[in-house]
Length: 291
Image 1: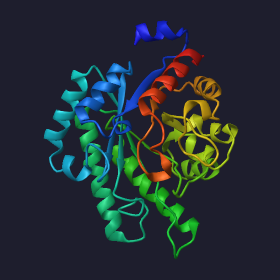
Image 2: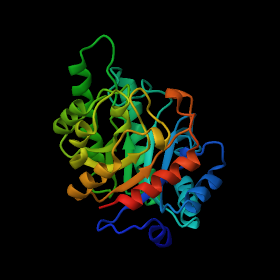
Image 3: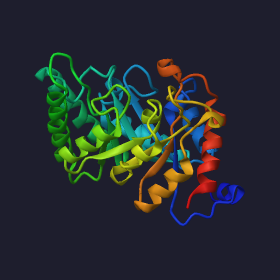
Image 4: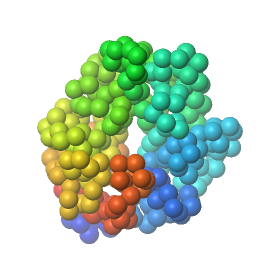
């Protein structure tokens, strides 16, 4: 990484920690995905636990968290990487979501969270991202939001003292699809932090200044190209001012990782860019423009 920083003229006063996501390269084996992230000069990895759509499925990994965590930690360390984040997702936004109206679904969600928290601890991961829930038909958005805050508060209590920071990602289709709603959820849930990804707001045409209000509440950050109407685009089409983002992170004394998070999936046409090339372009821009 030091040689890479010299190559791009890195002179930052802040410690910019860059991670790649294993789910950026789903067509590779998991080991090859980790190996490629290390080859790209990134020092951290965001691990996706996405049911039915990532290298590691929660249903498989969490069946034996002791053995699974030891295996993952060993393979990550062998590549010279650190685990920057564990990102948990179920098979769908409405499946065992944190604020599901059905009590049985919520119990299942709580149990899944507890097993994932144990897995994160055993892996030596210091950060866990989950989703904030969705708005459910048949009830007011206020009711859905209040239940999300209640359930997230329970998770924060469970995580207290574990050394694992728990955050949510405000995303397209969630109970908090815009910065104002995300900020409200944070205020309703003391101690809650965000995995901040401007692209979900840029896609809906919101300016960087709106997303920037959330920077003080971020404990993890995702970076990729986006434009109005598109959640993921090539670097040359990107409209997010990442130089401004870096200055905002610096001003907030941000201490977390910045994950270069390109994905490859049909959803939102997120399979139309070259993830290797785009990761390199974003990596070099971030290193060259860190304040």
